[in-house]
Figure 1 (cartoon, rainbow, N blue to C red):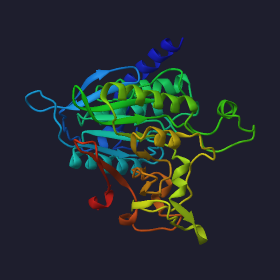
Figure 2 (cartoon, rainbow, N blue to C red; figure 1 turned 180 degrees about the vertical axis):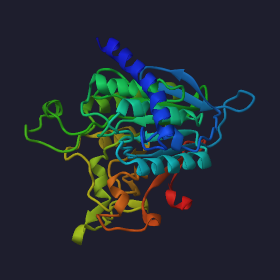
Figure 3 (cartoon, rainbow, N blue to C red; figure 1 turned 120 degrees about the horizontal axis):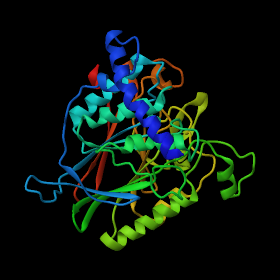
Figure 4 (cartoon, rainbow, N blue to C red; figure 1 turned 60 degrees about the vertical axis):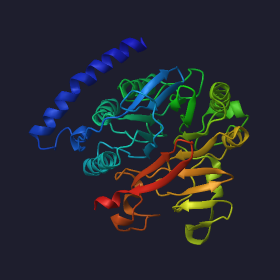
Length: 388
């Protein structure tokens, strides 16, 4: 039944998109608003990255030289989060897409990663398709990781179909991952510099929405335990097992993690002072950025950071969720990074903690991570205020 329903829904989407585009044109944008692909700069970049091998829970990619040999040139990841594309906020949507597409066109990254809360319109499946079409026009590879607003269930036909629509595009590297894991989108992307060498691995996870009964039961938590969700034990075990399997093939390797809801360790970087302001805790080396709101992590620490320390593979963790926190900090040897948010429709559009500020001072933008051939990384902000 699910396959029949999916087919019918997909036919409806394919039929509806041309109608929406026509309505948008004849009504000067008043009808069928938020046509994302129409708002972007339509710059085709192309890529010298290729898929080398694919598995259920992993994709192996590499940059190639013109002569077809593996390249060890720098690999650049552009990541952003929380675009919150909302059907009722046309102008903000168009601004978010315009700035994002300008950043991609100017940086020309090898890979773009979205850490959730991107498309949440009233016609989410339809708009996910056109968002995917917009990303495909750049001709570069991209990854979409679920946030806490894309779908309300950990596993559902609705959420599955939404991800299928994104994954169906040739340059989307997202994968469902193993069925037995929590949610959808638990997978790895391995960046190769030769058939026997990895420069970096990327681990992506579905970090859920809110703590549910199944999560409380699995962890032995009280029935009234509430808050934002956490990475589950089976996700952490998959990560540990996958790292160990990769080490058998390639030896020790370095990696990055991308998901939506921050780990509880993010709350160790700053301490709350008076009047809801935050000051460095002294427990971390802050590379850039600030904390302007409370850390939206789960109240339960399920142990991912402990697993990271145990394996010694992951160099940096990238998340979203908290729109006005934008720091990158080295905590206990691991970079804890907030991707720069990209959504002008989201709650940070008015300033920090409700205090208005000029657009040039807002944190909108992207995060750039440069991976060098030895696996070392550089992380930096690239704010949208350069386009003012």
